[in-house]
Amino acid sequence: MHLINPQTFNPEILYLFDACCDEDSVGNYHAHDFLEISLVLEGESEYFFEDLPKTTIRAGQVLLFNPGYHHMERHIKQTSHQLHIGIKNFTLQGLPRDTFPHKSPILNLGRHQQNVLQIAWRLLEELYQDAPETQVLRKILISEMLVHILRGLDDTNERQPTSLTSRQQRQQKIVDETIYFLENHFTEEISLEQLAQAQFVSPAYLSRLFKDIVGESPINYLIKLRLSEAEHLIKTTTLSIKQIAQATGYQDAYHFSKSFKKQFGIAPSSLSEKKTS
Image 1 (spheres, helix red, strand yellow):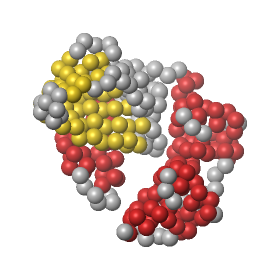
Image 2: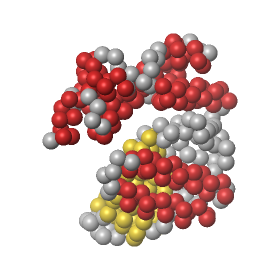
Image 3: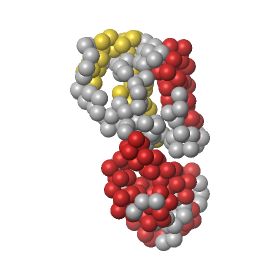
Image 4: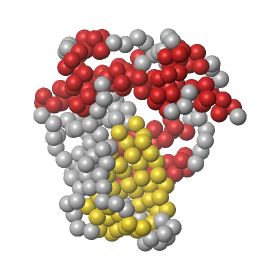
């Protein structure tokens, strides 16, 4: 398989949506800027694809939509139960960010198809759990699902060849290693110059390259990492706001509170009070 670098593979789950069709419905023809997995668990649904004729997708089938791939679905009342999963922030070697190497959106995974569906049912069980460790377990299950999809594509010869040039792969590697460093050292003082030096490139080049591939600068990415962890700590611990600020790389609690409110629309102290009310 050789597509996953275990050191830098860290997918972010955008949503898990348990879709039961209670009424007739027709979706919009649309595409995402992230990867979406759609699994038909029960019943059937009609799908429209940008490069395929209208197709009836039945229970047990798995769909995979890369960023920018247009599709639409039509349900008949009480005939379909699906699980939709949105994922971003991952790289497979030799491929653009958030992209899988499948030839068709309708997957043929051979012996791995059943493994993927079993994981989908386990994800549904976790979807309705409120325990703090649930988020971690969901991520583990989705990572396992992605591995089974890759193995299935290999087994059935449904995998596309590498689509990035050697130069693009080197650029992707720079960004992946920078993200890995940020995700593992975000509590420390980090500068753009430090990040660039580690990759033997200029700060301006790293900033431009990172933004082209990820969509934001390395420092903005760092800020979001810190604030996301801070939100998690507020919701799951009894640490004070000052302690949380320090634990996520902020030396100034006022600056932390200001940044937090800008990101989430609520002050950290208000979120903490809301948790205990």
